Length: 206
Image 1 (cartoon, helix red, strand yellow):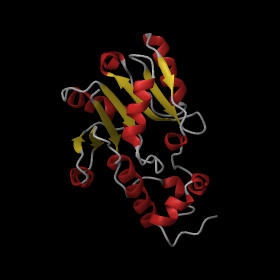
Image 2 (tube, rainbow, N blue to C red):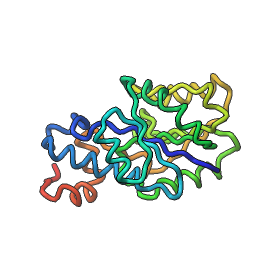
Image 3 (cartoon, rainbow, N blue to C red):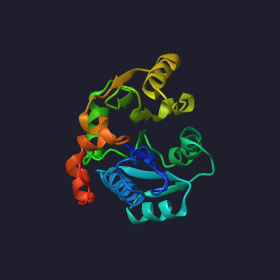
Image 4 (cartoon, rainbow, N blue to C red):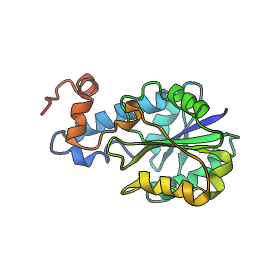
């Protein structure tokens, strides 16, 4: 298995706006960076690509030992589509697209390689968020990439699940709290309060 871990990363100072009622801009930036480092550093001997449109993020990816892919497209779906040919040329067998805000996924590479080995052959793997709405992780075998469409946005888990049926490929749903716990809202902060307290020691839980 030759797995490519693909992590789209926005500028750290632009993300997590829904946390603004609880965290300052500086705190949101520090938290976004810390969560992204968990995901990118948990490689477990897999190739890691960071999809970005910001030179500072590209430099950060290089510092973490990942390969940055600068894109000009606007939006997550278009950015991933633009980056995909570069990733495929690296000779991978599976692409795992992972959100950058999974602070509990400290052994991400191991989690994903184990999930792939335990799934039916050529299965697409989807790990939804805890609300069964977003797609926190999507693992697509190389042979399906030519027909795959990224469907991030509202209710992306259903959209990606429906896509597997449309293109006729097996689907495995991965239920794992480490993959399901992303951080978008103030309520989410309370689920990872130890992580937040470590990186934002001045933070007071609501």
